[in-house]
Length: 84
Image (cartoon, rainbow, N blue to C red; front, top):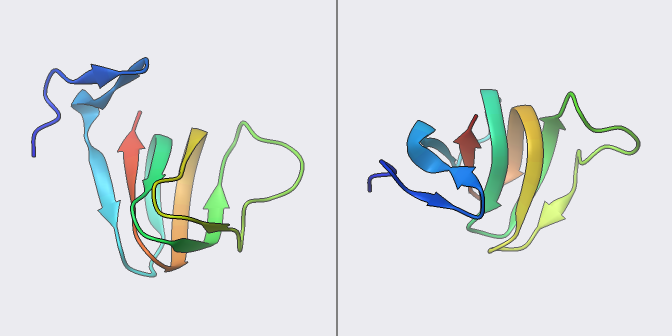
């Protein structure tokens, strides 16, 4: 799969993404996260969000979240975190 030159919905995919399907923390700068399996997040860090946390949240397959994320760790499931 190549992301070269692909852009959609104002998102530049040329920086690539990180496929995550394990339970270790993944660190980087991500602009959105696509869940391609039913997934429960263990922890997720976002420097530009305030209020309640998304830790321990469950997301259905096909769901995506957008923002600036610097770390994500899953309890189960799988996602792709796209880099900034």
